[in-house]
Length: 308
Image 1: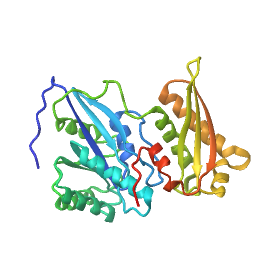
Image 2: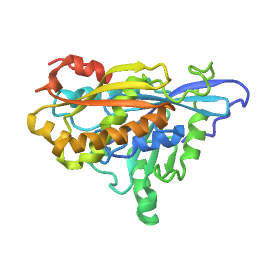
Image 3: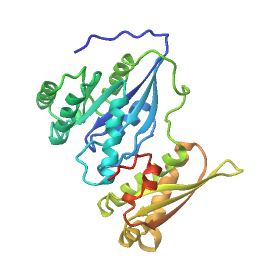
Image 4: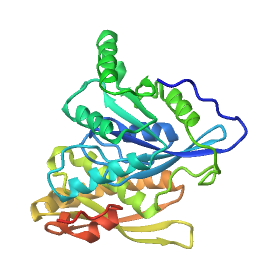
């Protein structure tokens, strides 16, 4: 364990923080809470974060640049490998790493594999946050913290609820103390280094998952094909929802097009709140078999295309 780190209250500091964990550990919810705004997709469906989302938060004179990485799991296909590679790339780049573990699930096989990988990387400034602690009895929680801490020498252990915000301020303050001195990389009021076209696509993808739940397989993607700023200050956004089969297209469209209208209405509302302007959203559904093997789709998602 390290001693408390002193940071000058006046000198600017800036650094990268990678948030990692198993799928559905609550990383995107935590990121949105740390930043104070919605910058990352949140869904009960596992493995929804695909590319690294760069979000920015201020803590005094320190700028924290967060990398919300895809969940780390055992990859079975090309898209899985690209997502896991993106996650470990974030770990290697971060000035600090925050491992998030779902306290309800405990120290399961996926979390153990991540901790073992940390041992091989010999990373410093690795912190542990046990999430959803409000749903676990105190005795079980203390035992879980002890078990995980014995498996790896974490700098600090936090008990948090990303959904309710409990303990999140303490995490942000501690991370700020670990950032190196240096100028800020972004304007003070900027929340994310994500193109608006990409963020708009993520918003729609989230609404697809929320509206269809288990009816639609994981293998769908959304791309913003056109973004046009109108003279009245509004934006026209044309997006395509790619699916792999005609049967999936019918599910997204719904009877008489009612499902796609519902998805579009929810997505448009969030976009207008996020972009602070009126949005005219037009959604299309296209079938593209084996899009998971198309390099162009990976580029659109901000992922490197794994070879082989």
